Amino acid sequence: MPLIPFTKGHGTGNDFVIVADPDGDLDLSDDQVAALCDRRFGIGADGILRVVRSSATEEGASTPEAEWFMDYRNADGSKAEMCGNGMRVFARYLLQAGFASLPDGGTLPIGTRAGVKTVTTAANGFEVDLGVWRTDADALVRARGLDVARPGQGIDVGNPHIVVALGSSRELDGLDLTVQPVLDPPPPHGANIEFVVPSDPLVRDGVGSIRMRVFERGVGETLSCGTGVAAAALAVHHWAGEAAPDRWSVDVPGGTLGVRVRRDADGEHVLLSGPATLVFSGEVSLA
Image 1 (tube, rainbow, N blue to C red):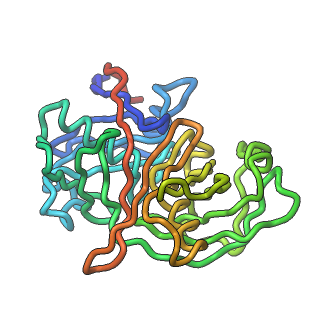
Image 2: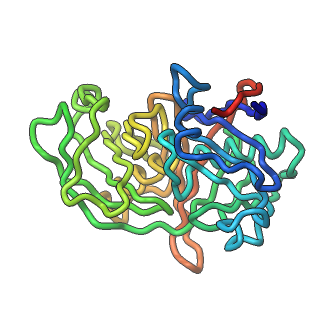
């Protein structure tokens, strides 16, 4: 049985198995992805990042301006539009493997199922332009640990999110996210669900601050979710109105990430910044 080289990486605890497949020769089944991500019988991860040239995959054909396409799969094998933490880890891998370069002040385009996203260097690691964001359909959210269903704000940052505001850190810490929250009505393609608590004060020195936990579709609770962090900050930004700051600091169980809103000609872009770490490399056989 052939051995497949891999690298393990993470962004604030949101961890990934990275597999280099430049020429698109590797066809991973959902079951194989799930086996690799299994934390007891596999390598263990929240998802897989397949590193493939855009020209070598049908999905990458729509992103010819990006040499590399991030084929992101959730831990259950399902495909996802993109992943904010994964983007930074993907960029770190491309640079370390010598597949790409990113000089100071330059940009690195990466293809995803949500289009091309650009990565730049930042003081805390890398910053990803997630593109134009928008509000989406709301839903009621029932979760174990909440006494009644809470309203959730729909946010789309290339993939779907429902953000729920809680009244205290005690409520946030008391959630049992080993059980999947229920959305009413259920979004057609599912959604990541974020639970947020504003800091007190909400804004300090022009920067907003919140805490967050997340249940990722196809995964479960994770220590961090990059697009979820962006969605949570955007929801609070939306609720706060015109006086809301454009820069946010978001604390998740795996660390702290930065979010900022930038107004461009095509609309409001949301940018996510934070660290990306490669932990170890090895080889694994595929059953």
